[in-house]
Amino acid sequence: MYHPTILNLNKNPYNYRKLEHADRIVKAYNPLCGDQFTVYLNMEGERIVEATFHGYGCAVSKASTSLLVKYLEGHTLKDFQDILEELNAVVGEADASQIQHQDLLAFEQVRQFSGRITCVRLAWDALGELIG
Image 1 (cartoon, rainbow, N blue to C red):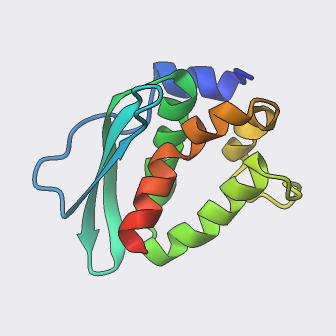
Image 2: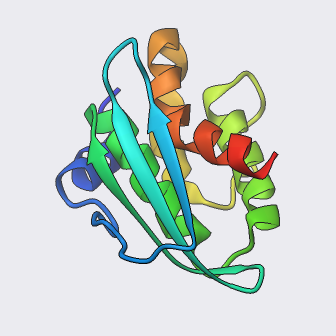
């Protein structure tokens, strides 16, 4: 389950820091395991110009949140829906062969551990709730 990408992003996460004066803040918490992350977004109009995160959790949830903030930069919140569909294909039953964001494939093995899908989706679902 611990693909090298997951291990690397756990050890060296992308934009792992609090962002002062963020335009939007999303809190993600899993009471079952204690994973807790905050995602910070700075926007210019509809475009996300900076995305960071901070918090703690297992290697899977930290790596997944790291990829989320990496993919958000330069995109709009509407673009997030397309990336979320790719994540859903990777961890769900859908065909993941057409994935554009190849790093997401690191979570493909999580399908075999249904309890860990929540770890992958934690910050993604929190952001999805924010944008409706």
